[in-house]
Length: 158
Image (cartoon, rainbow, N blue to C red; front, side):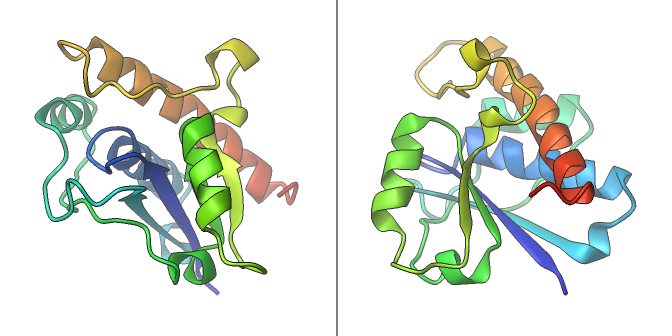
């Protein structure tokens, strides 16, 4: 049975697309892509239908990650269709816990809780910052966190 992961950030144009692409790459490198599906969405609908921020696309391209999805807002059905839903920060997690229907199937997890130091576990929104440095930091955090999460899953710890 295919396991499903959904990455969430505020608008689905910066952090969650990067996290989606990194998790997909992590799974492909593990040779189990046929067993997993990865998607992303936003808490809000402000950017629905848009491509990711050009800086996020540049970072993904710089690291050899392909990406062609468009932003969408999280839906109630996502809480039933996905096994794992990841937020990037405490506000995302508060929103996810508020939005999740009672008895939902999905495990709600903060991505940065996997493999990152406690002081670095928040994957900050780079949208309002100039340049690409904050996007690169989000990418690097996602690489560590996605790898750590996937190792835990494969070891049966999650």
